[in-house]
Length: 132
Length: 132
DNA sequence: ACAGCTATTTAGAACCATTATAAACTGTAA
DNA sequence: TTACAGTTTATAATGGTTCTAAATAGCTGT
Ligand SMILES: [Mn+2]
Ligand SMILES: [Mn+2]
Ligand SMILES: [Zn+2]
Ligand SMILES: [Zn+2]
Image (tube, rainbow over all chains, first blue to last red; front, side):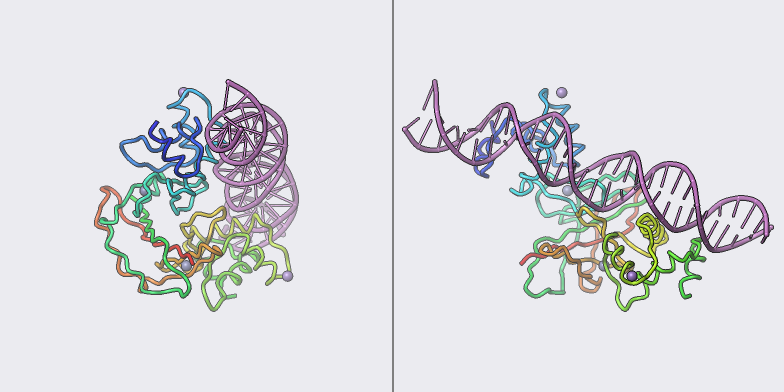
């Protein structure tokens, strides 16, 4: 299995459930955005055994902590995650709630002129809201 | 009362509760960021009658719809609102969860090169996460 | 292969911010 | 004043997320 090493190297035991979730999340042509509810449905569609909701939450949080997933800053009643962990930005379609990746090259370089002393910048994320 | 006109002009009846919430939200030196829980405490401190939590929610949503408040796109279990309704951005201090305004002039002009056809840009918001 | 240990999974309960309900109350225009 | 729609309110319901604690599974050393 291609994800066993990745998990072991992260200090995560390569359990059956984690490996199956890796397949759903990372064995894809394209990166994607998802909520836990989305992921639960994807898992049901792709695998035949059941994975409990608690395990899905546990795994997503474990992967996020290891840097294999990112949360997307957005106002919603659900948390949005991203399998694209590169620095990038988002269009947010207000009509249907869907997100579209905006590559760094699609946004001019962002230069934050103000400094907060004792702090350093960890990330700069742009959200572009779209309407009709 | 200075807020009666504002409310009437928005099609909102100037009730006692709404006027008191206006005082707390808008009769200030500076704009600020708040959650519903923050606002509930501010109201308790500043006024002597009780305003029900449902009314606080109703009022904040009514004011948001009228454009007197904005939500701040951020991942949190609570919604963050802003009394600063100008176009601006935010520092987000990961240590304590506090937000700091970043004026448009503190961020270089942002030029979104990619277009989504049939859609127009409603807002561009930058979130700068800070760590130690 | 086995034992022992710790990590992980799991069903279900708990949590808690937010929203819905529906009855009482209030602002407003006639 | 009256009538009516808008608003407030206590309380219940909702729903995403986290917690709990018992069962299970991966791992290390023998
Ligand atoms: Mn299936
Ligand atoms: Mn008081
Ligand atoms: Zn993305
Ligand atoms: Zn602000």
